[in-house]
Each structure stands twice: as C-alpha cells, then as structure tokens.
Length: 190
Length: 190
DNA sequence: GTTTGTCTATCTACTAGTAGGCAGACAAAC
DNA sequence: GTTTGTCTGCCTACTAGTAGATAGACAAAC
Image (cartoon, rainbow over all chains, first blue to last red; front, top):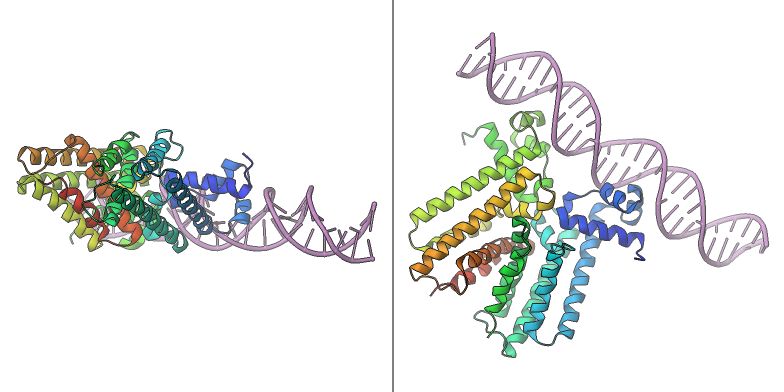
C-alpha cells in the first residue's frame, strides 16, 4: 500500500461519500476504519468541508488526467468513448467504485459547502468538454454521425452515464448501466 | 391550505429530502418550519425511517396516479411523453420541485433503511413500466420508431431524465434539462 | 371518558471541532 | 556528542451543539 495517513483518510472518505454523500459519514467513521482518533483527522483536515473539498478536487484532477491519457493512448474516437464507458461498467460490476463522486454530490448541490460545490461543477464541465472533443473528432473522422451540435450530444451522453448509474443503484442491477449507455453510443456510429 | 399536521410534516420533509437527501435534514428542521416541537413529529411519525418511508410511498403513489391520468387524458403517445417531460421541465424552471424524490434517494441507496429503499425501487420500476407502455403504444400507432425493445428504450429515457436533473443541478442551469431530454424524444419520432 | 394532539422536559448517542500534551525525528548550537 | 529547539503526527480529554427518541402532563374533541 504505502499510503500516507492523509491519503488513507481521503481514500476512506471518498468511499463513504460514494456510499452516502456529504452528510452520510462522520469523522468517527473514518477514524474507526483506518485506526486513528477523530482528532488526528482534524490535524490533517481542519474541517469536514475542507476534507471533502480536497477529496473532490483530487477526484476531479485524477479524472481529468485519466481522460487526457485516454485521449492520447486511444486514437480512434469511437473506441475512446467505448473505453471510457467500459471503465465505468467495470467499476460498477466489481463494486470497486460503483458511483461517480461528483454525480453523488451533485444531488446534494443546494446544501454543499461552496468550496465543494465549485469543484463538483468544474468536474461536470470538464467531463462535458472531454466528451465534446471525442464527438467532434469522431465526426471529423467519419466515425460518428451527429444530428445535433457535439456540445449538446455530449450533455446527453453525460446525463445518460449518470442516470444509468442511478438506475443501476436503484434497481440493484449493475447490468442496467451498459444496457442504457450501450445503445446511446451505437446510435452515434455510422 | 387546509392541510393536516401530518400532511404539513410530509410536505416539508419532502422538500428537505429533495434539497439534501435522507441525511440532509432533521426533525428540528421540520419542527421549526411548521411551528411545532420535535416531539410532536414523533407522535405522527415515530421514527425518521418511518416518516421517509411514508413520504416515499406517498410520492410513488401520487406519481403512479399522475401517470395513469396522463395515459387517460392524453391519447397520443408522443404527446403523452412530451407532457410528462414538460411537467418536469416546469418544476425545474420554477424551482417548485427541482428534483425527483426517488432519484435523490436512489443515490443514497446503500445506506437507506430497507422500508425506504423498497419504495424507491418500486418507483423506478413503475416509471420504467409506464414509459414502456407509452413507447409500445407509440410504436403501434406509427408515432415512434424503435430500434431496440421498448423496455430498453424506456430505461434509456428514464436514465436521461434523472441524469438531466443531475446536470441541471450541478451546472446550475435549469435549461439543461430540456436540452438533454428534448433530442432524446425527437430521435424516436418518425 | 376516552381518544387525539400537543406540550415541556429530558435522555442517550453522536456531531464537528478544540486544547493541550507527548513521543520521535531532525537539526543546529554549544 | 550532548544539549536545545522545532516540527510532525498523533494522542487524551474535552466542549458546545444536535441527533433521534421517550415520558408524562395537559387540554380539547368525539
């Protein structure tokens, strides 16, 4: 493992946010899980708002880096989109990360600390931007047929991904995810 | 108004659930809002789990009734679907009910009391069933062209609606909703 | 006169957050 | 090379406040 305590705190907090959102966990939950005292968490992250803000900022950064490397390593846009969606399907199937941190927090937006809400919004913009770029490239290379502007199609795709996560969770069936997003990609292909 | 205290409690609790989910409110919040004491709420709803279970069951029932009357009053399937989506767009635009209670709770599914989770799942099934019936009727009457089974198309539509709500909230832009769901309906039309 | 609904008062458990101390690592000062 | 000071990371012990929940009194309604 070789994780610092701060990293362990962030990892555990992230898992708890994914399970129950901002109000779904406490410092005590994290402390028990990683074997330190509550006060020690305050040493690393003075307030809960700060802990979650750091956590979301880190998540957003990791996601951005992951999408960037995907753009570099998978040249064909159609395949690139598929790889992104397969990543999420795998996370949901093995329950390792069955939900997007920012999708989770987006629901609680009206009562999130400002520092957290800002990063959540940024992630939505980043993801929409990346999807737009993939769709644009795919259309230029003749892999996708777009009936509406790529920006709008990107919003549709992003909403489908988040909605599919929600349905998979609500219905308790991880396969719902690919059943929803699969056809959405197929209909773009030429 | 003419609401009973129980109804007032349920109304306020529902608004609070929509804003912040199951862990996003307390009995004190409701008590302050409607001008009674915390203990009085326990008289009507002994536990929080029970209060929210009743609330969700009521919501599910109301939704079912609303969809049923929609089926009866709007004969054309395409128009029926449009009317359903317009209802949500209006709710989001005027902020009267900017999120589906069950979509909100679906995110918190892993840590919801069983009685609540059951009703959330039932709502997802009901909604998917209603959408399926509209799509089937539309296909039979030559209003929709379905490339995949109506059950699967219904899941896609449902996910789009919930994902669009999430995006509208995350990005702070109510118009995202129709920008996402609009094209999803258009592409079904012949 | 029993039921219904509300109240005050209280409880226990838990929330985030604080104060202050202590052990070990690492220097620089003597 | 021992002392001194500083820093990090964690600790115990505590605070004020809030969580959901309970007991029992009271008054009005049926």
